[in-house]
Length: 296
Image (cartoon, rainbow, N blue to C red):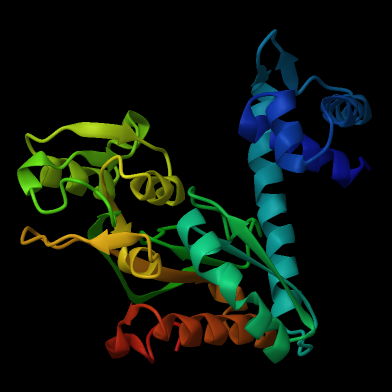
């Protein structure tokens, strides 16, 4: 029999397309991935991967093995989820994946209250824009500003995060909307709903600054350079900012809570979910019609 752990490294190489990318995914060094892959090929006495200068390419046999190995990996993750779901203990680690704006400006502020309510749970907050795989246990729970579509996930719309236009208290053009200059995302985020809204609002008026995240846009607005579109919960808490009058189309982002179906009834996961819902009720427009929704 071959070492099943070596197979996990092979799957990572096949999924990412290179040794270095697999190393980053597995959080090990490049040499370890190469050694593990070589050991698997030696054990099986076949070549599974052609090592090219900048990438790794599966051989014909490698593609067959990868398909089978993927099924084995899915089974292993399923075993983990089933065991975790049946553990009655409220002691352990729960990973919560959230967008950066909510990680730093909302969830981090509730860590003290969470620890007092659930002292046995170590909450690990992963600040991530991109979607993560709950099937692969990259997180236990995800909060997203879009509805994820990964199979076997259970999803609930929590509510909405409304936005407004903000500028510094001493912004010289606050009372002259025709002279406003706007702070927006940089071009790589052209497809984001928020970016599209801001470009529509700006219309013919100038873009004075492009920034890649909302936290920095808030700081930029405080300097007096221009107008930023910020979530109300961020803008209203900042005494150095003023909300500007705006009669155009309102903008908001829906907030979604997601958990894998296998974990939805885990006592520890349920505890975290209930805390998230209760905390968000204090700040956001919660969709009360879904109080007993898919996660209810």
